[in-house]
Image (cartoon, rainbow, N blue to C red):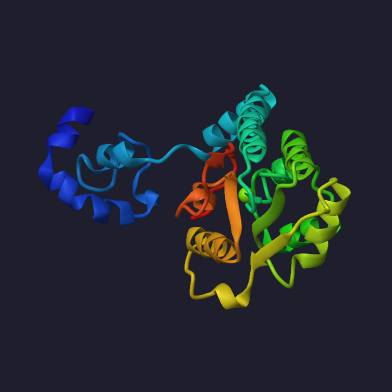
Length: 244
Ligand SMILES: [Mg+2]
């Protein structure tokens, strides 16, 4: 059965939820099948990206230098805006830049690759405590350029307080980014905000209410940038994980 015919089969489409719930053990291969005819073909149409292929693609993206180039390009664009905007500061404005931390100013890429892209909470916690994540250099330079123009740095991270506070403070210091106006973690009191996007938007709104003009918001996740409360938002690449 061709892919096109599968797509045209309303009955098969209606059965997809059931087919997806069946164990793969029912199929010796895509063409030899213990479940009803067409089921394996139908299943093949929804088979997700193979994990080994996905890992290979990420390795290629990292190893080719494309990741570093795209990071540097995004950071350069953000830095140029920050410098232009700071130079056009209006009297009385308290300018600030909101920066995410992981994969925005600190790189965990080597650690995550070393874990074969796995995430084990205890291993991650130990990594945070070692405070060894290197700076993402173009972003450290952006941080320095902003501060040189009197633009405040407001860090807004998904790392958790109190657990991650000491390791994060030390890591930022070692990475040359130990001076900032605020460092806000995810805390127990944020539990009513169900997503990172909602928590971060609320934090930026609170900073605005305190009188900060957030001229740039920079992060590696769409959820870092959703919800406004910044004059401009800049998205850095991250092929490793996604946070809603
Ligand atoms: Mg991040």
